Every structure is written in structure tokens, then in C-alpha cells.
Image (cartoon, rainbow, N blue to C red):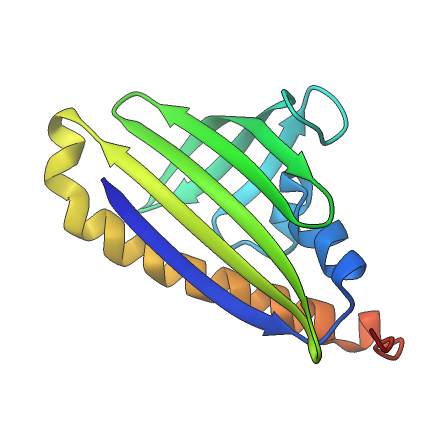
Length: 151
């Protein structure tokens, strides 16, 4: 089992951050890996999505299911491919300076994919850090320039 966790402080209100970062359909706006997302319905428990991702030089269509949806605190997703099972938590916490976003991932690689675990960990950690940095840049940019509300 591989476990990764990365957090970032975004100087924006919780509701604003949750609206963008909780919804996998909006991942292409800030994720370098996710190119496109199709969903069976609005975000909520049981919704099925297909993410088209580009990772390690390959494109894949990844089925994703929303397991938990608790606005504005967390979203839990499960992605399943042959030999790769991933659980992902997107956690949101109001702070004095904005919103702390934590992405936690547990992945199980089996078969021949288990041999690639060190590469998977390095790549996943790098993309997680880059994606959260891009999310922060996007939300803190002039496009979201309204003042931070006191909490």
C-alpha cells in the first residue's frame, strides 16, 4: 500500500476553494494530469466519472466513483484500473488565513505494476505538489481577486 499526503494553504474563503477543488469535473482547470472528465450527474455520493488522464507518457480513461461528499469538508473518491486501486481524500479546513487543502491518497498496485511502485510514488508525489501549487495560484490570482472575508 502506498500512502501520500500533501497540503497547501490557499488565501481564499473555504466555500470558494471547496467549489473548485472538490469537484473532479473541474480538475482539468488546475491538474496537469487530468485532461477531461465526464460525469453521470451532479457531484454527490455514487456519481460515476471517467477521467481522461495523461501520465508517464500514456493516456488512459480512469473510472472514478464519489464515495463521500460532505460540503465543505471533504470528498472521497475511488479510482479503479486493472492492477491499480486508488482512494483519494480531498479535505478542506477553514483557517485564520484562508483554507487549508489536504489531498491524501492510498494506492494499491498489484501484478507487474507492483514492480513500478517507486516510480509511481515519485511521479504521484511530484504531480500532487504541482497540482496543489497550481490550484493555489489559480484561486489566489486576479481572476479570484475579491477580498478574503473575515471568518
